[in-house]
Image (cartoon, rainbow, N blue to C red; front, side, top):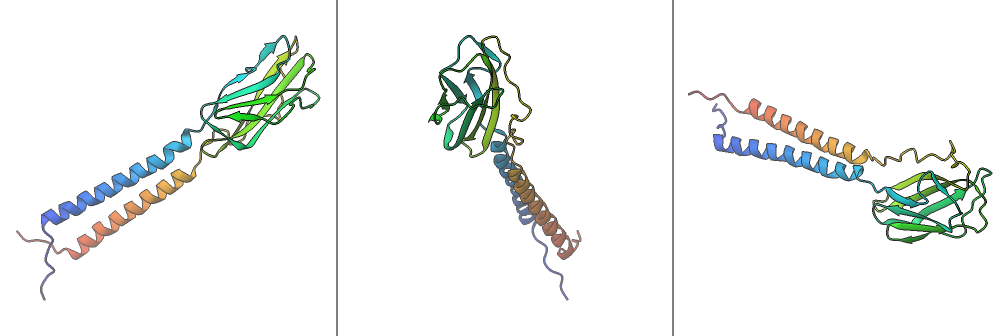
Length: 188
């Protein structure tokens, strides 16, 4: 019985390079899919600004985001301590700016802007902005906290990337193990 011919060193070297490249590509894909999960849009400015003390009631609330926001799902309310909503119409969106008109006659009091929008990457983001009119204190509410997933980090790309890397590692180990079993030792 004759032994199976051994593969030339150049073929083994090429297979090793292919395996290394596969692992590198899998790692890059994992990082490529995971990176956008950490780059969610965010609120970058507002009028009134957080904890601002205004001498007169504003005519509107203006929220500015780091990127375009979607029209669907945009919600804004401006409440006082009694829970009355002072918004006077639907939010208007112009790319990355949301404006909502306020009702006339807002008394001197503390208010809380509660907002929720869908960012350009499809993730909902939300938050609150306390402000006051006159000598009142900005309104704070334990019920009006940012979305529990406000950091916007999605684990799906990380899980998919981890599975891809795991599969590549298993394939590499299986190929190397199979080669060692089928390649007879060479005698020099």
